[in-house]
Amino acid sequence: MSLLVVESAGLQTTVQDFGREGFGVLGVSASGAADAVALRLGNLLLENKPGAPALEMTLTGGTFLFPDGAVICLAGANFGAQSEGKALELWRPHAILPGQRVALGPTRDYARCYLCVAGGVGVVDFLGSASTHLLSGLGGWEGRALRKGDVLQIGKLEKNIRRKRLRPGILDTLKPEKKLRVTRGPQFDWFTPEAQRTLTGGDFAVSEESNRIGLRLDGPRLAAQVTTEMLSEGAPMGAIQVTPSGQAIVLFVEQQTTGGYPKIANVIGVDLHSVGQLRPRDTIRFEIVSLAKARELWIEQQELLRSEERLFV
Amino acid sequence: MQFQAASDQALLVYLGEEIGAATHERVVRLLRLLQREPVKWLRNIQPAYCSLLITFDPAAVSHSEVQAKISDLEKHAKKLPAAKPRLVEVPVCYGGEFGPDLEWVAEQRGLTAEKVVELHIAQTYHAYFLGFAPGFAYLGDLPKEIAVPRLETPRKEVPAGSVGIAGRQTAIYPFETPGGWRLIGRTPLEIFQKEREPMGLIAVGDQVRFRPITRAEFLAAKRP
Image (cartoon, rainbow over all chains, first blue to last red; front, side, top):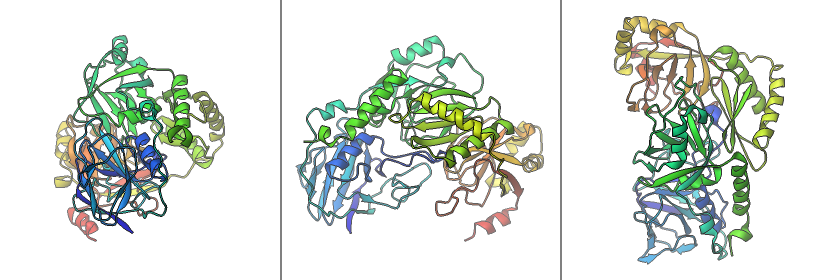
């Protein structure tokens, strides 16, 4: 058994995998990595399963001691990781010797950095997933964000890791974007023509009050022309719901599974990982695409993400 | 039955337009059929008052293919025998520290606190769906006489087991979470327990009744 000791946790560090989709009937949302693309690539570089549990750090990382050593890979945002005074490059495996530390600082670009370890982080599954659901305190490590002094188990290294690298250009193709593509939401027609135009013409800023449940957007208000009270209904991940005051909220991985606010649009599947890399005060824009286009992009991205040859050299 | 694309991976199926037993019966029948014959592309089902949100794998099927499959299933749903609803009884200690909004509700509706409790326990509620948090069941219909709006600013922390009301609905908070419903009491029962089978005390389609208990009974039930 190998261990990982949390010497400092960072702003919000949780254990995440691909989440537990499929329990809406119980009122349980999927949770899971905010940037599932980064998690997948980080794990694949270690020859882990693509959704092996890893640490998801938010805006500022922590310091972690590996008493038994480990092989790690950092993926996603650049948190200026170091080990024993040596900078650790993103997107490549690093051997950490017994007793060495990995220290991360504030972000230099995006919102979330994943610390993947060969063999994965070991926690007790809840409904088939290691993901932490913070609101309900379920899953992950004791259902909460990590704290100083926590000692987690990590997988034991059983094989030599083949030295593979990301193919040049892959990170450009999969780069998190600040222009998010959306499809029309089920209540798109409830909004005034002006609000419909503003959605794609306006600049929106990610508010400080944003988290894994949802991202609140500051900026232009979106007025509805239909004001009848809506019956609560299921809301997909990435739904852009609008409050009576006209504020847009993007529902995210730990979302409420149902909602009673009208939804003007929905972020498309291939752009959800970009949402996970948005920081407070980032400016974002929306572009409407057709369902057919979104589907085409999804199939294309899935094929790329499942192709060893296209991802790695 | 009406369909509406909700996202590039999700389709809303509307089975009616008004909250009520008849429409919800159709929601539950379709839900049961989908659970019984799981289809490979199906990723999640989220029932609500009058609708089901179907999340699917767009690499495998398109919206129109999902729509065709659901239309087909719905025909069979009508033949499905009605499920016998389970009755769940929930003991609640009303008012005081456990129900900080009880007096406010009474005042708003020109009733005594006792009358509010009497009306709350007189009803057998229907569990329409679970949402907000794991195990949080939307129960209806709350008697008109005690319907009140939500708090304008939600509380940052609502204790687990709190019984709230909002509009024509009532619910129990399974965990300590933020919450905007008016709190009238608290139950000592564990609403959602991951070691239990089933995890949730209340499931979609259940009937729920509330029974008043004293503070002493509440504390005794809480003792391990």
